[in-house]
Structure formats: C-alpha cells, structure tokens
Length: 180
Image (tube, rainbow, N blue to C red; front, side, top):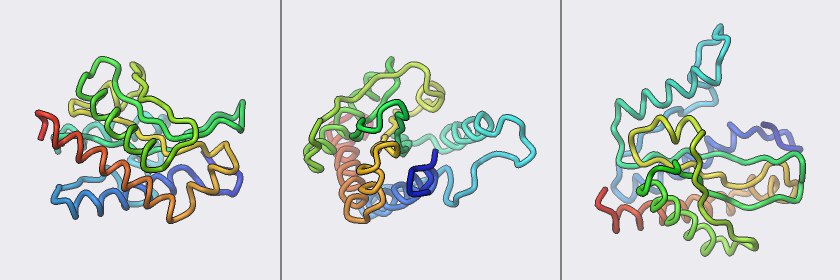
C-alpha cells in the first residue's frame, strides 16, 4: 500500500515499530522485531511472497515465545477516502487478545483524543492473529487512503504520541494481566 504522497505502508510500519521498541526497552522489556529493515521476510524468487513472509513472521514468534505480539500496520479503504482513525484488532477467540486490544485502543482513543473513537475489533481470518500462539494484536495506526490522516501519520509528533499510547496500553495490560 502506498499513500498519495508516495510513502509506503512498510516504511511507516517500520518507523512506528522502531519507536515502540525504544519505549518498551526503556520500560525494561526485551523486544524482538520480526524485521528491522525495509526488506520482507521472503525469498526474492518466491512466487507467494506475502504468504512466505507471514509464515516466517509466525516462525519468529514461535521461536521467541513472547508474552505479547504487536503487529503494526496502516489501514486503507480506497472506496471512501473519508474513513479514518486508528483501530486495534485481536483474534476473535482470544479473551487475552481482546483484553490487550481494549487496553491499547482505550489509550489511543484517550491520549490522541480521537475524534471518532473506535472499539477493538475481533477477527478470525488475519493470518498473524490466527497462527500466533502468543497474545497478539494488530494496531492499525490510521488510514493511508485518507489524505489528512496520511499526512498526520508521517508527522513525528503524531508518531511519538501514537507509540506512547500503544506502549501505555501494553504496559497497562501487562500490569493487570496474569500474563505479566
């Protein structure tokens, strides 16, 4: 996915993930990234790059056995450029995932003073949510298909506020959960 300005989702995802890593590390947590560069986790000659990339991400998660897994993304909805706002997804059959997603979504809605607050959304088909053994959520920071939000997603102050809210939501979950 590429926004109108030419910024790619993978570029933004990496920026947000690295910022979140710093905050969680400062809080004393060991953070493992599934990728630290723009390169995907697939072989260049692979026909099904996205599938291989997702399988390899899940393999990293299985190997590391994290308490929580946070997958950072940017959303899109080409049918309506007015759609906006961050949203957190969790595996629909995971009570822990719902609890983590709710904690993060509440922090995002409150700290970023989201105009149209969303609620966390259960999903049964997203590969990373279905296949990860750890408590996993997908954080969609905003919509690249909304021009105003795309611009905001690239602002360092917004990025810092977003990752602070995500971090606070994670820390609240870990502080109140049996997972801690």
